[in-house]
Length: 74
Image 1: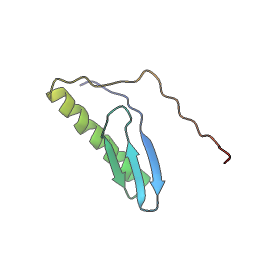
Image 2: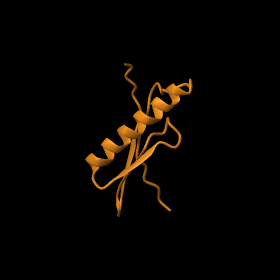
Image 3: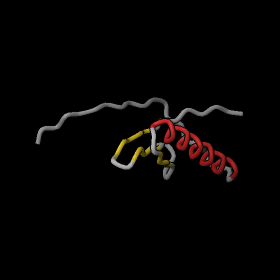
């Protein structure tokens, strides 16, 4: 079993939480709580990687990830 490391972006909105994995196009999940969305995105990533492996596709990995917040005056 190989261990993969992916970046995950989690956003909160009025209806709960939304998460996506930038390395895996189309891999996203939703949840009512932060903990739920973490479990859901983990499952979505696992299924996405299993599908890629089954089809002989490469599983993309990033060497590093940078995340920052910016304030922009308009």
